[in-house]
Image 1: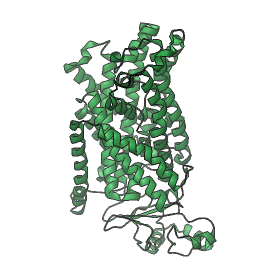
Image 2 (image 1 turned 30 degrees about the horizontal axis):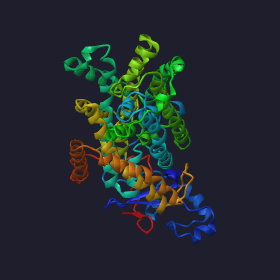
Image 3 (image 1 turned 180 degrees about the horizontal axis):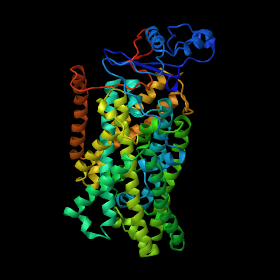
Length: 539
């Protein structure tokens, strides 16, 4: 039999839906007999018997093993449903494409960071992109590396929360993060057209803008349909094209730099809401890559490395252009809005550099769109494989992509594309914050309750350190939520309430057999029948 994901046997009560986790026991037999942190396995732990157990391959032996409380051979046991097979013969994503997929999930380049200077001035903008990563990005990336290698499958954070807090809250996590991702994706056509409207004024509004949004969405959705490996390598090419003009701009701007401009600050004239929301939006979504873990080649090694490389790339990709733009051009905060980097490029290098920056922005927004849609659609596929969504969400196209998830995500983008830039950023941040609170709770809960569970990558801090690491980003979440406008608050709370009601409705439809649900035969068992362990049950 294959070992459970991350050494865990994650089980669920078939009646209540509560989840159980059986931690991997410490290697020492003496330690195992005296350790009270994990449940005692119900079967004989003698090494010869374990070897014999691992040789059980046929169906009857698997069923007997399940009845005894053993791990079921990396297979679901579902109620009244046919297991949904997964398609694993598609090419997996390697390190380099994964780095740029993460880069586009989080950043995509410095496009959209201009508002930090307009809201708070040069010094606070620079400090923000140096300090904020340590408060938010580093903890989120570390947690993603640990939890993503612990549960290396599509669904990502949905599975983490389900394992720790139960399937109901796992569904809420999936709903809020998917909706947040779709709202985020609605932003990229807006940014794309904002950068092009100076060259093509007709794209500033009206029917031409609507048609441009529709055409762009259709083209990029088709790219997602054609396969994740294509999306990954397209992200690499787009990333290089998007970063290169800022390197050139930096070299051209060296003689024009005035370091004194970097120190300008006026604490009495700061729009904290816009400043924090812009920082937060540009430095979050590190966990989104976890929903693609099932498509990654050797995720237990590849994912942590890719997150590290992407973190360095993102921080440098923000700080360096800000340093150049502020230092080479006299600061006028009113001009620092979306698209201002193209104007700076014209001042520093001329029209040719401006066109290059605008083209890079267009390509960057395309990269962010396809990366975000990949994450959103594979999340829906992962939830369907877990039996949280109807079976049709788990269907793959001939290219291995989640067709229904892609169509749902694209429809959401079109419906939300009428919102303004600031409204989109605030609304997605609000929902994202709720999801991150659940992630932090799941991370800490699994650290406290199951310290001996196998973690291929483990953050080098103890339980107390894990709790302390979550405190600063949690405080930041509270600040972002407190600064939201009434309109954003009401819309976001309405979206949360929809999720709270939707999950019981789907369960009712499943019991009535109105909609077919299915669980994958190729994922760790979430529906074991053994309930004997007091330590393992997670309410």
